[in-house]
Length: 120
Image (tube, rainbow, N blue to C red; front, side, top):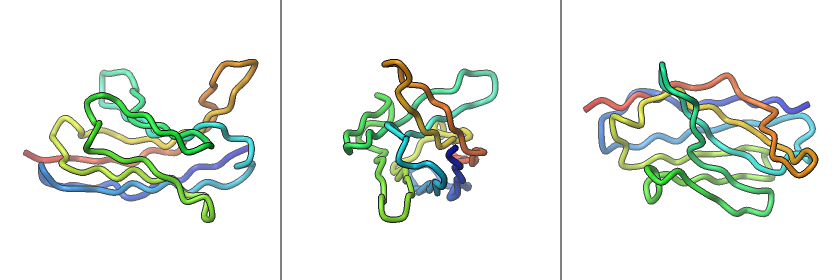
């Protein structure tokens, strides 16, 4: 089992920055990919950024160049640095962790979510 606890959300004006953190505990060694999803009411949850155990990162097109995902392996913490924020980035952000099961990536573990609100 893996436990994930997010922090760092809040209210910021457009153009500002927020840094989200996700503290992980439990069977961390079993995780292949870590990531950040976001969700707004009435829409599907979308993958914003992900990073593999080898350090390769990928991003949603709309956040490329503005968001950076990173990990502190010594402290089992995942980060999402969000710069140049826009009102459309407003969402609940979830930390998630995935393992490969029979060759398929399965997002098995989720945090409780943290609200990020960007005012115009």
